[in-house]
Amino acid sequence: MEKEILEKYEKAGKINQEVKMFAREQLKPGVKVLDLAEKIEKMIIDKGGGIAFPVNISLNDIAAHYTPDIDDTLTLKDGDLVKVDIGVHVDGFIADSAFSVRLGEKSDILIKAAEDALEQFIKEIRPGKTVDEMSKLIEDVVMSYGVNPVRNLAGHSLEEYTQHGGLSIPNGHIPSKEEIKEGQVLGMEVFTTHGEGLVKESFPTLIYMLIQPKPVRLRESRKILQLAVDKFKTLPFARRWLKGIGSTVMLQLALKELVDREVLIEYPPLRERSNSLTAQAEETIIVLDKPIITTRS
Ligand code: MN
Ligand code: MN
Image (tube, rainbow, N blue to C red; front, side):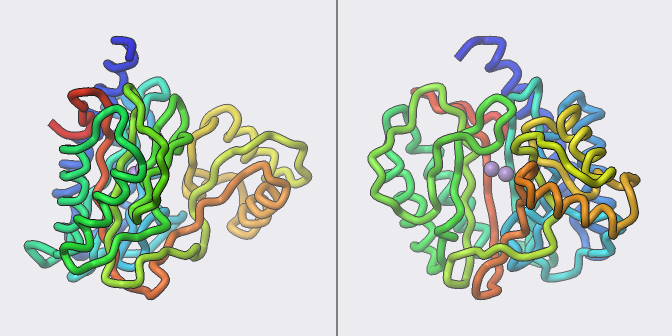
């Protein structure tokens, strides 16, 4: 990897670490998720980073892809299993990292299992390892805790301005001989649950991403498209960031038009199928003979 690119990955990682530390301190019963999200995203910008994706703050059986809506009233409460997933980029080079906390508890077996599986992954990952070996490792470590991995979620490669690159490393074992290559950058994430270990799409959708610009009919749709092209580019964005485009109803109609026309793709919240608690751990890893974990020191 070129030195300049490595430095950008490391800078994004450093900002991500600082923001995570701040976010962890903020997690308390009574905190409004909307306020927390806005503080986190502001901090990323203030520290000189770009927001790689809307901060995900997903509770309990929602594994991922929840970010607060405009005027969201959701508030943290005792016992919540909170996942905070933060994306920072520097010139398109992304640091993607997540942690989980169980409010009111010192420890939680789901969080331990996810963190340990990620830890073992970090110990073992080298250029040339296969998806077969690494997905089996994740599954084995998670199941040794007597809990399940979420089999239809996966770690993924990160590419310039691309949150989900071509490589996928599922949380459940798949016998793929695909090799993980030197210099590849992974957002390696592990999800655990007491449930059956599958997520399904839920609602409402709060996160979108541009696929390709096309002519659209509604004035609000054209405004959103303009913003996507000029500002969000190929990175995901939050419905919350579109506040001011129009009324709630018009915003919803415009987003529907954009999705129906395949201008935008939607990322609905992912809920565990048996409505069981889920935990997540994620770090960004540059795969080298001596791997670099950009998102922790
Ligand atoms: Mn993530
Ligand atoms: Mn990720």
